[in-house]
Amino acid sequence: MKTKSAKRMLTICISTIAICAAGAAWFVRETFLDEIEDYRTHPLRFNNFRVDNSIIPLNEILLAGPGRDGIPAILKPTFVSADTDEGFSDRHTVISFTHNGETRAYPLKIIVWHECMTIRAKACGLN
Image (cartoon, rainbow, N blue to C red):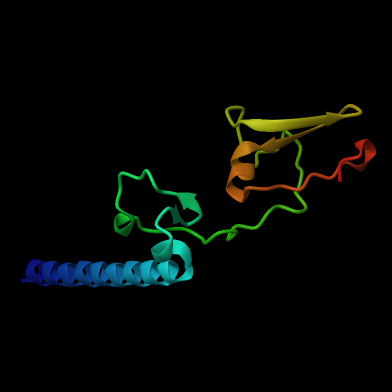
């Protein structure tokens, strides 16, 4: 008797989650599509990308993630010693900058995620 009740409750929970997820996906899709001015009026542009040679119909493309410029640039990066364990390993790709014997490494995955990073090095004229 308890297993039938537990199965019924599990089915109800899974169904509720699926309905909520579908509703949220519909809401997000409709919200973001309304924000893109040129989505329906300019078929060669979609979210500021050229799609005139796309093999996927535009109505099948779902937008996800933050909108354009939704992830802020890093204006004042925090530096840590290479000896500290900050979630990086020797396998991570970095862009390095050396001036007057001081070297800084900028993790590429952070730069790519934020799309921009301000580097200030007044001693050599970068600002």
